[in-house]
Length: 95
Image 1 (cartoon, rainbow, N blue to C red):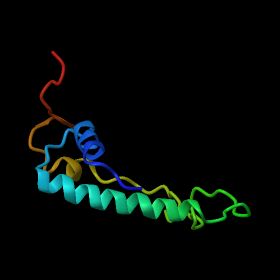
Image 2 (image 1 turned 180 degrees about the horizontal axis):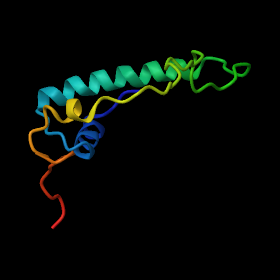
Image 3 (image 1 turned 180 degrees about the vertical axis):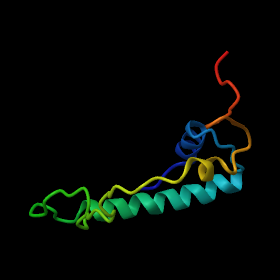
C-alpha cells in the first residue's frame, strides 16, 4: 500500500509534526513499507491459533510478606530535614 504525499502530510498534521519536503518523501517510503509488512501479516492463517494476551506464562516473583519489628523511631527521624517531636514536619500543602 503506497501512501501519497497528502496522506503523509495529513498524518503529520494529526500528530502535530512539522515536516520538510525531504522528510515527507522519506516518511512516505517508510510508512508504505510498514503497511506492506502488515499486509503480509494479514495473509497468515491464524484460524487454529487461540488469542493470547501474554505469550509467556506470568509468575509472581515477589516474596511473601512477613512481619518484622519496625525501626526505632529515633533512627527513622534521624535524617529528617525538619522534625517536630516524634513526627516529620512538612509544609502545608493545602491553604
